[in-house]
Amino acid sequence: MKKLVVFAVVITAVYIYLALLSPKVFDILVYDESKLMPQDIEPKVVDAILKNGTRSDAGGGGVKSLPVVIFGPRVEEKARNLSRLFPNITTAWSILDEALRIYNQRLNEAVENATSQFREGALKISNSTKRICEDLEQLVEGYMEARKKARELLLGTYGVVALGRAADNHTQRFLELYEKYSAVYDVDTAVRLAADEAYGDVSQYLADVTWRTWASQGAVENVTEAILATRLNKTLIELAHVVVAVGVRQYVYIQLINQTPPLVKPYLPYLVCGGDVDKAVEMFRSDLTRNLTAHHPPPTIYSITAAANLV
Image (cartoon, rainbow, N blue to C red):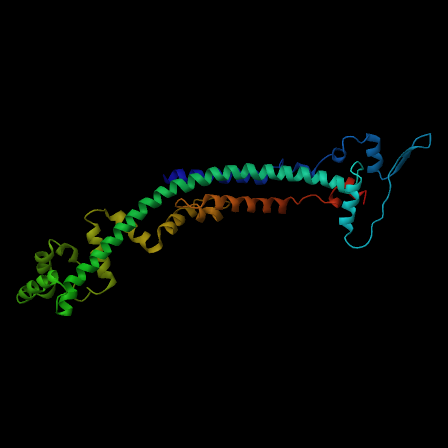
């Protein structure tokens, strides 16, 4: 199961890496400027515009590039509004609009493809770790139940002796037996003999507890592990102890983090134990878009030669 999780993480990272480094994703940044012109413009007119020159035929007619002066505040807004008034005329803004259309199309395709692959890997991580976490939750539940019984046993034996009085019929029976045995044996032996007779075969759980240590956290842990040892092996008991200390989700995260590629690590906390896949996917999509546009900024009028020549 753990291998499946690691495999899913690695596959996801590979797809993301390819999406980030593919030289074809943004080949819009190297294009034929003439392709950005409207299709119904004659090639000679395009040449004239690109050269920022004027062509007249022998009859005195012809096509001219007309310089337009725009000034005042909001120059770009005015230029765009002017371009919209003459949709069939090639301007710096019409060239930029076409470049941005292609850029955004390529960007969206790259992001959607990478996000789709990420979602597949994210679902595998979420589903596989969910099963692991469910098993660990059961282990933690068993550990906590054993710890509760350990405290009750310590209070029902050494606690009753220390207090000198009983809390109910069961502890009253224990106290009477303890007083009988304490006349012959030391405190610890008397406690164990009375406990076995009053509560059943429980002295085995008190083997590492003494009158001096019974009120410590260490004594609680010793009794807890002794109770668990009747059902679990040493490895599982140690695992339960660690998981209880750090928490199930944190434990699974720690186990996977060193095997997770750097590109996937930021999203791992949202995926373990059947986490919020949709949230992780949206975060990935947003981060990928931001990174791609940072490394490959959208075109501007001045980054496109054909458009820059018309400004």
